Image (cartoon, rainbow, N blue to C red; front, side, top):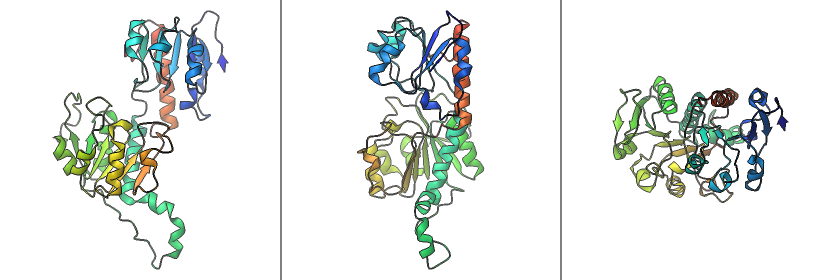
Length: 327
């Protein structure tokens, strides 16, 4: 679909608009900035042709590598409608004087809410009881005691990545009576909540009753959850990941859950998305694993804030002072 503005205005191409639109987002706010072409999705074979004459490209997850960028002679701005920009070859973009910007802060409340929801589902075994509602009429007592419920009041929540989302989760969990500690990481820039103890690796994993991952994916954090760190964790501990899938060694987590060396895990992200059917964590024999489809950020409120961020990036770029500039 093409939304035309005045002649001579820049061509703007959105390569995967369906990633943020469930039929409830009005993209017409972007038409004031140029001639807008919306593609619901773009296959690798379609990208080069679609961006050939574009001055501005908007993408969420479509990969723009050096080969693709080499054919985009008119391209001056890439807006990633997400915080992470790992789908863009930044070196190639910089060599071609292409500005790359992202959008930050739009999903903090939604992701923190979802992380807490995942943790509370694990603690109450809500997902397991809900899947077995038909068994309640067969109970000989007024309730069912098939799965344990864990009270999180007084327990320790370990947060890996105390940025905006991690801190929002910690603040809410503290209101429920949890004690908060943060994984001490070299290079961490956060100075929020200095009252929360910063704890080194082994103590962090062994003392936390629940761990929630919110740190960026780097060479240092890739597979930070692995067979060694999982062995340090309590048998009663829960693991939540709404960060990046590759923070976890997924086969190691599957083995840990099968052996009941931790109590449960809830994940909103996997290393491949969408995952293949044969993904190691989609096996039917893994107990107490709750997976949602990278949906933590998808509230309507968050997606509207994301749209506002895209519009702001367009506005500031065209005014000569691009906001949220990565390069």
